[in-house]
Length: 282
Length: 304
Image (cartoon, rainbow over all chains, first blue to last red; front, side, top):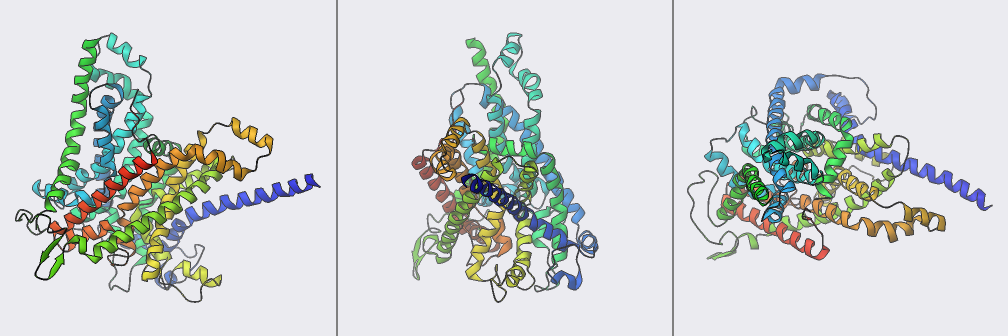
């Protein structure tokens, strides 16, 4: 009897578990699937709720590129994010070497200060940054976004790299110092080659952060030619307030999100380890 | 060796300099300027023409009575909204994140696919997820209303994002959907660091799973959970994107960040907006300090 019950209990548990897995997958993926579905619809079909893809029309995709400089806006986002990643990695690696491998006075305090920067609200530097951007003549130009997005990515990069460098064995650099190498050579020849995976992971996270940034991009750009894609999507509007072009908004959403999702599936393991290194150990 | 460590220390400062100078220029300096602007009547139209007015942006008295941020009902509404949003969303994310992590902690066919799938909401730009949900929550054509109508849960469509009663709930829903994956991954990482032997012993002794969870698992992953919670809470306190897009600038759902930006940019009053930004900064700094002290969270373990 007891055996019987435990057997049916096991089957029940398996079904419940499979249900939970299915629910997680559906909840995570359905909204994006629905966005794709909507992006293929037009006219009155848009306003009929459906769960499957019926007639596919690419009109929405054509219209976002025709009615606004969406291609240029994608290039803007790409350019800003790439430069931000490059600068973050460059400044992050050298700083992390100092933080992770060298003992010096004030290291702990400095490290906490850097971490604090990643925690404070973006809006608290908005007016100061606005003044700086204007003083440098960068208002409504892409470098303003590069400067401001570094605030998001640089502290995080420094933090992850520092954690990574700390864990490398001491013997690695000692041999190099005995051979008379300078610290700079040690960074370049000993640490950089080992940091490949960390560079890819952190670079990817920084890229996503910069690609998705909205507040600075909304405030420091004015014309549609300098907008990045999140701002462009937020500001898509119809002929009237009542007539929002949902098909176009969804098409634009799919276009800017598909590359990110591909990156996520390709680099899944690394992203997970990067996120946890940045937060748990942080 | 002493010569080497001195040389290394000097090199360390040289290596740090570019990063420190950059951060000081783009974070430290703007932050100080924001503090300063909050003591002036600066306007966006001409940032160089300002007058020092002390703490008048925060609190002042003139012939009409008291004025300033501290007696501004809209500001307090924003503070209330932000706190409610933070508490609700972080609580829900922690619970759901833990549940998802417990599921993903098991071995099953297709686990790595599911793990990648839950990263999708996290990777989608906030703006995009807000737009997608705005469409799904649409009062007339939204799929959520259609689903609930056909299931008989509601009798007429609800204007989720537009009605003051449901707007905050809608915002929390979108945020929970978007950030539960982050929480789940942090919980999962903590679960995977747990020792397996005590679970073996507990299983042999026939201790029920739920007791094991509350008596062993939860206390063991608590430190990691605390760090995850503070990361999410700090993020939630500065919420901007999702509210700006989903419910625009209505007073009912405005967060502190949305309030500050509205005054800075739309009303052009840099002084008042900066005062709000500074107040938000102070609130966050205070809550962080409290949390770290009370929760005894160790954030920056010193190397070596």
